[in-house]
Length: 132
Ligand code: C2G
Image (cartoon, rainbow, N blue to C red; front, side, top):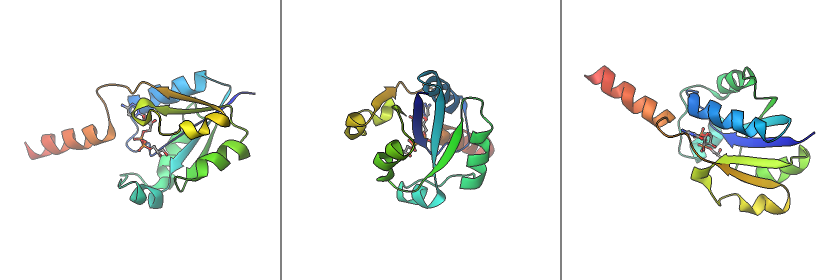
């Protein structure tokens, strides 16, 4: 069984997220998503609208996702790949090259980001709508 893993905050879930989850799943048979904890989001300088528990529950409902684990720090990826016997690590290409250190453990695939949508764009557009 080919196992795939990907990481992210996945806040205000949108079709760009679904695109990468769908494509990540197509690279194997089992997809694990490591979702950033609220504490780790602070380290990333992000404030998610939905709590970790709610972002986790939402991701677990997606047909492409087989398992959701917590992402608590930058360092856990090496151990996650070992512990979960991962064959493929996937991230959007805004992270191109950032995780090449995993290449001696598993395949590392950067997929093109979906253009035209992002959580920050949603927040910005809503601000505009509400402020006229
Ligand atoms: N993504 C995408 N297209 C978009 C928006 C996001 O392909 N329009 C991808 C990102 O490239 C990432 C995933 O969706 O692979 C999740 O995006 P975020 O929730 O913004 O995750 P990020 O903050 O980049 O966290 O350790 C890695 C970090 O946790 C990644």
